[in-house]
Length: 261
Image (cartoon, rainbow, N blue to C red):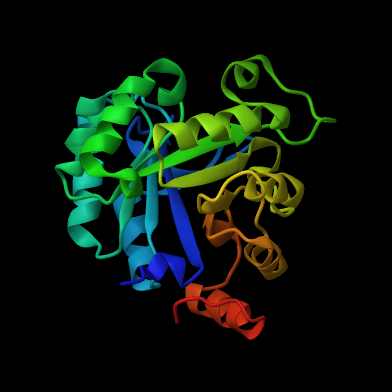
Protein backbone atom coordinates (compact mmCIF):
# COMPACT_ATOMS: atom_id res chain seq x y z
CA UNK A 1 0.00 0.00 0.00
CA UNK A 2 1.33 3.45 -0.93
CA UNK A 3 1.56 5.86 2.00
CA UNK A 4 -0.36 9.13 1.80
CA UNK A 5 2.86 11.04 2.47
CA UNK A 6 4.20 9.87 -0.89
CA UNK A 7 1.05 11.02 -2.71
CA UNK A 8 0.18 14.37 -1.18
CA UNK A 9 2.29 17.42 -0.45
CA UNK A 10 1.99 18.35 3.23
CA UNK A 11 1.60 21.66 5.04
CA UNK A 12 2.95 21.29 8.60
CA UNK A 13 2.49 24.01 11.24
CA UNK A 14 5.25 24.39 13.82
CA UNK A 15 4.48 25.24 17.43
CA UNK A 16 7.68 26.57 18.99
CA UNK A 17 7.70 26.64 22.78
CA UNK A 18 9.78 28.81 25.10
CA UNK A 19 9.43 30.33 28.56
CA UNK A 20 7.52 33.61 28.58
CA UNK A 21 9.64 36.27 30.27
CA UNK A 22 6.68 37.62 32.30
CA UNK A 23 4.70 34.55 33.31
CA UNK A 24 7.72 32.18 33.32
CA UNK A 25 5.43 29.51 31.87
CA UNK A 26 5.98 27.67 28.57
CA UNK A 27 4.24 29.51 25.73
CA UNK A 28 4.02 29.18 21.96
CA UNK A 29 5.88 31.85 20.04
CA UNK A 30 7.12 32.95 16.65
CA UNK A 31 10.82 33.50 16.00
CA UNK A 32 13.01 35.67 13.81
CA UNK A 33 16.52 34.44 13.00
CA UNK A 34 15.84 31.73 15.61
CA UNK A 35 15.36 34.30 18.36
CA UNK A 36 12.04 34.75 20.24
CA UNK A 37 9.95 37.34 18.41
CA UNK A 38 6.35 37.24 19.59
CA UNK A 39 4.48 35.04 22.08
CA UNK A 40 1.14 33.84 20.70
CA UNK A 41 -0.49 31.75 23.43
CA UNK A 42 -0.59 28.33 25.04
CA UNK A 43 0.76 25.41 22.98
CA UNK A 44 -2.34 23.34 23.67
CA UNK A 45 -4.73 26.00 22.36
CA UNK A 46 -2.58 26.61 19.29
CA UNK A 47 -2.61 22.88 18.55
CA UNK A 48 -6.41 22.79 18.74
CA UNK A 49 -6.61 25.69 16.27
CA UNK A 50 -4.45 23.79 13.79
CA UNK A 51 -6.49 20.66 14.46
CA UNK A 52 -9.75 22.46 13.63
CA UNK A 53 -8.20 23.85 10.45
CA UNK A 54 -7.28 20.37 9.26
CA UNK A 55 -3.48 20.55 9.31
CA UNK A 56 -1.70 17.54 7.81
CA UNK A 57 0.50 17.03 10.86
CA UNK A 58 2.09 19.09 13.62
CA UNK A 59 5.60 19.86 14.84
CA UNK A 60 5.92 20.71 18.56
CA UNK A 61 9.40 21.94 19.46
CA UNK A 62 10.98 22.88 22.78
CA UNK A 63 13.17 25.87 21.93
CA UNK A 64 14.45 26.23 25.50
CA UNK A 65 15.32 22.78 26.88
CA UNK A 66 17.66 24.43 29.40
CA UNK A 67 14.78 26.37 31.01
CA UNK A 68 11.86 24.05 30.25
CA UNK A 69 12.48 20.77 32.01
CA UNK A 70 12.01 17.56 30.08
CA UNK A 71 9.22 16.55 32.46
CA UNK A 72 7.38 19.85 31.91
CA UNK A 73 7.61 19.65 28.14
CA UNK A 74 6.56 16.01 28.25
CA UNK A 75 3.33 17.11 29.98
CA UNK A 76 2.71 19.63 27.19
CA UNK A 77 3.29 16.92 24.59
CA UNK A 78 0.96 14.56 26.44
CA UNK A 79 -1.80 17.19 26.64
CA UNK A 80 -1.47 18.13 22.99
CA UNK A 81 -1.36 14.55 21.76
CA UNK A 82 -4.42 13.65 23.83
CA UNK A 83 -6.53 16.30 22.10
CA UNK A 84 -5.49 16.10 18.46
CA UNK A 85 -5.91 13.42 15.83
CA UNK A 86 -3.22 14.42 13.33
CA UNK A 87 0.32 13.00 13.42
CA UNK A 88 2.56 14.74 15.97
CA UNK A 89 6.33 15.19 15.78
CA UNK A 90 8.30 16.42 18.80
CA UNK A 91 11.70 18.11 18.91
CA UNK A 92 14.06 19.95 21.24
CA UNK A 93 16.33 18.51 23.92
CA UNK A 94 16.28 14.94 22.59
CA UNK A 95 19.83 13.68 23.04
CA UNK A 96 19.36 10.12 24.30
CA UNK A 97 17.48 6.95 23.48
CA UNK A 98 15.56 7.22 26.75
CA UNK A 99 14.32 10.76 26.07
CA UNK A 100 13.17 9.76 22.58
CA UNK A 101 11.57 6.56 23.85
CA UNK A 102 9.68 8.53 26.49
CA UNK A 103 7.97 10.60 23.81
CA UNK A 104 7.14 7.56 21.69
CA UNK A 105 5.56 6.00 24.78
CA UNK A 106 3.06 8.90 24.67
CA UNK A 107 1.96 7.83 21.19
CA UNK A 108 3.65 10.46 19.01
CA UNK A 109 4.63 9.52 15.46
CA UNK A 110 8.05 11.19 15.03
CA UNK A 111 10.89 13.02 16.70
CA UNK A 112 12.76 15.96 15.14
CA UNK A 113 16.45 15.93 16.04
CA UNK A 114 19.57 17.94 15.20
CA UNK A 115 22.19 18.31 17.93
CA UNK A 116 22.14 14.56 18.62
CA UNK A 117 24.09 14.06 15.37
CA UNK A 118 26.97 15.90 17.04
CA UNK A 119 26.58 14.73 20.63
CA UNK A 120 25.45 11.10 20.52
CA UNK A 121 24.70 9.63 17.08
CA UNK A 122 24.90 6.09 18.47
CA UNK A 123 21.90 6.88 20.65
CA UNK A 124 20.00 8.02 17.55
CA UNK A 125 20.91 4.87 15.62
CA UNK A 126 19.49 2.89 18.54
CA UNK A 127 16.27 4.91 18.30
CA UNK A 128 16.01 4.24 14.57
CA UNK A 129 16.69 0.52 14.96
CA UNK A 130 13.90 0.33 17.56
CA UNK A 131 11.22 2.64 16.15
CA UNK A 132 12.11 2.76 12.45
CA UNK A 133 13.44 5.35 10.02
CA UNK A 134 9.98 6.81 9.46
CA UNK A 135 9.96 7.93 13.10
CA UNK A 136 12.93 10.32 12.82
CA UNK A 137 13.22 13.68 11.05
CA UNK A 138 16.78 14.93 10.74
CA UNK A 139 16.90 18.72 11.07
CA UNK A 140 19.52 20.86 9.29
CA UNK A 141 19.73 24.48 10.46
CA UNK A 142 21.99 26.61 8.29
CA UNK A 143 22.76 30.27 7.63
CA UNK A 144 22.10 30.76 3.93
CA UNK A 145 22.71 34.48 3.45
CA UNK A 146 26.46 34.97 3.20
CA UNK A 147 26.01 38.76 3.36
CA UNK A 148 24.44 38.60 6.82
CA UNK A 149 26.34 38.63 10.07
CA UNK A 150 26.50 35.27 11.81
CA UNK A 151 26.62 35.90 15.55
CA UNK A 152 28.69 33.89 18.01
CA UNK A 153 25.77 31.78 19.21
CA UNK A 154 24.79 30.82 15.69
CA UNK A 155 28.40 30.06 14.81
CA UNK A 156 28.25 27.28 17.38
CA UNK A 157 24.87 25.87 16.37
CA UNK A 158 24.14 26.70 12.72
CA UNK A 159 25.80 25.24 9.64
CA UNK A 160 27.16 27.06 6.65
CA UNK A 161 25.47 25.94 3.40
CA UNK A 162 28.64 24.21 2.19
CA UNK A 163 28.55 22.00 5.29
CA UNK A 164 25.14 20.61 4.39
CA UNK A 165 26.62 17.98 2.09
CA UNK A 166 28.42 16.26 4.96
CA UNK A 167 25.48 16.63 7.36
CA UNK A 168 22.92 15.27 4.88
CA UNK A 169 25.17 12.30 4.07
CA UNK A 170 25.68 11.59 7.77
CA UNK A 171 21.93 11.78 8.43
CA UNK A 172 21.32 9.34 5.59
CA UNK A 173 23.94 6.96 6.96
CA UNK A 174 22.29 7.10 10.39
CA UNK A 175 19.00 6.10 8.77
CA UNK A 176 16.64 9.06 9.21
CA UNK A 177 13.38 8.99 7.28
CA UNK A 178 13.07 12.67 6.35
CA UNK A 179 15.14 15.85 6.28
CA UNK A 180 14.06 19.27 7.57
CA UNK A 181 15.83 22.29 6.03
CA UNK A 182 15.90 25.48 8.12
CA UNK A 183 17.54 28.60 6.70
CA UNK A 184 18.00 30.69 9.84
CA UNK A 185 18.74 33.83 7.79
CA UNK A 186 15.15 33.65 6.46
CA UNK A 187 13.42 32.58 9.66
CA UNK A 188 10.51 34.91 10.44
CA UNK A 189 11.20 37.18 7.46
CA UNK A 190 8.38 35.93 5.19
CA UNK A 191 10.62 36.56 2.16
CA UNK A 192 10.48 33.03 0.75
CA UNK A 193 12.53 29.90 1.39
CA UNK A 194 16.04 29.21 0.13
CA UNK A 195 15.26 27.55 -3.20
CA UNK A 196 18.90 27.27 -4.31
CA UNK A 197 19.84 25.21 -1.24
CA UNK A 198 16.64 23.17 -1.55
CA UNK A 199 17.53 22.36 -5.17
CA UNK A 200 21.06 21.36 -4.17
CA UNK A 201 19.91 19.06 -1.37
CA UNK A 202 17.23 17.48 -3.57
CA UNK A 203 20.02 16.57 -5.97
CA UNK A 204 22.12 14.83 -3.33
CA UNK A 205 19.52 12.69 -1.55
CA UNK A 206 16.40 10.66 -2.22
CA UNK A 207 15.06 11.34 1.27
CA UNK A 208 11.85 13.41 1.48
CA UNK A 209 12.63 17.06 2.18
CA UNK A 210 10.57 19.28 4.48
CA UNK A 211 11.30 22.90 3.56
CA UNK A 212 11.13 25.47 6.36
CA UNK A 213 11.76 29.17 7.13
CA UNK A 214 10.76 32.25 5.15
CA UNK A 215 7.28 31.44 3.86
CA UNK A 216 5.16 34.57 3.55
CA UNK A 217 2.83 34.19 0.58
CA UNK A 218 1.17 31.48 -1.47
CA UNK A 219 3.75 31.74 -4.26
CA UNK A 220 6.46 30.74 -1.77
CA UNK A 221 4.66 27.45 -1.10
CA UNK A 222 4.11 26.88 -4.82
CA UNK A 223 7.79 27.50 -5.61
CA UNK A 224 9.08 25.10 -2.95
CA UNK A 225 6.61 22.28 -3.53
CA UNK A 226 6.90 22.55 -7.33
CA UNK A 227 10.69 22.31 -7.05
CA UNK A 228 10.38 19.01 -5.21
CA UNK A 229 9.97 19.44 -1.46
CA UNK A 230 7.63 16.85 0.04
CA UNK A 231 6.29 19.20 2.69
CA UNK A 232 6.53 22.73 4.03
CA UNK A 233 6.83 23.46 7.78
CA UNK A 234 5.70 26.93 8.85
CA UNK A 235 5.49 28.84 12.12
CA UNK A 236 5.25 32.57 11.45
CA UNK A 237 3.02 32.32 8.37
CA UNK A 238 -0.25 31.37 10.08
CA UNK A 239 0.43 33.76 12.96
CA UNK A 240 0.53 36.82 10.70
CA UNK A 241 -1.32 35.93 7.48
CA UNK A 242 -5.11 35.90 7.55
CA UNK A 243 -5.51 32.70 5.57
CA UNK A 244 -6.82 29.27 6.53
CA UNK A 245 -5.42 25.89 5.61
CA UNK A 246 -8.42 25.34 3.33
CA UNK A 247 -7.72 28.56 1.40
CA UNK A 248 -4.04 27.72 1.04
CA UNK A 249 -4.78 24.18 -0.08
CA UNK A 250 -7.27 25.45 -2.65
CA UNK A 251 -4.71 27.85 -4.10
CA UNK A 252 -2.04 25.14 -4.24
CA UNK A 253 -4.46 22.73 -5.89
CA UNK A 254 -5.32 25.35 -8.50
CA UNK A 255 -1.62 25.43 -9.41
CA UNK A 256 -1.52 21.67 -9.94
CA UNK A 257 0.03 20.74 -6.59
CA UNK A 258 -1.59 17.67 -5.10
CA UNK A 259 -2.64 18.37 -1.53
CA UNK A 260 -5.15 16.77 0.79
CA UNK A 261 -8.47 18.61 0.55
